[in-house]
Amino acid sequence: MPNLKEDDNALREVLTQAKTIAVVGHSDKRNRTSYQIAQFLRQSGYTVYAVNPLIKEIDGQPSYAALQEIPEPVDIVNVFRRSEYLSEIIDEAISINAKTVWAQLGVWHQASAQKAVDAGLKVVMDACIKIEYLRLQVDSTGDI
Image (cartoon, rainbow, N blue to C red):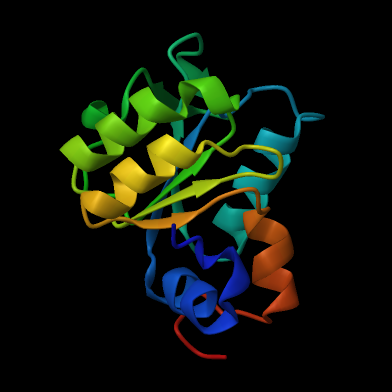
């Protein structure tokens, strides 16, 4: 099963071509990793949408209950939920024609990843998007 985590060129391509990222499991608590990484992604030039049905707003921006509610196409679905939720999140990502599903460190589910690949999505599992962005020295404007 192709996990792009091991392919630096593919990771760099995903990160440089993406403009819009949905953060599933985005917390409104500043000390949480999902909040901090979403802020980093915003500061790096990405448009970031919070997806968390338990929260209405984060820092004055709406939080969406589901990926289908986001008002524009999504390039990367960045997942901050436990592995057992990946299957339903991948179903949503497929339904909105997302390009990539990126599951954070510790999040991995083989069958869900295969379902995403079979639907034509790129998959990164068990990898931190911020760590990879910094390691690969990505510039989200498309330059390296």
